[in-house]
Length: 125
Image (tube, rainbow, N blue to C red):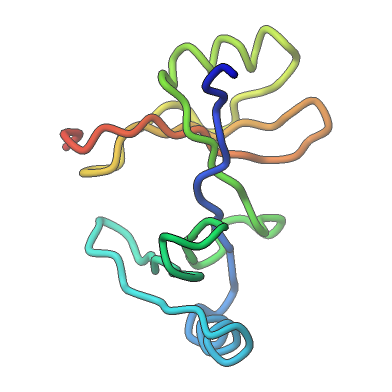
């Protein structure tokens, strides 16, 4: 079977990070760690790496309609931007670096669902 791009991360957009973190900690036992990056962002551990499932992140809502968004790991953000646009999707957040993580871009599919594509590259500054 060929190596397909896979959902590797989810992101929850919230109005009140402190309140939301308390909710998810109390309800599901998820663990939150403040990210040391250039924005207020919390990494979410939903279970052990050996268990099925993915981890995520939480951030303060930037747009009124922002909710949960999934990130898809791709080999090349540039290549997938071209594919997304060729097949009817729209790029709403252009390619940008995340220091120590890689390259990301935001897109909407043909039905208006928002996703992020991410190309891992820890050398990005």
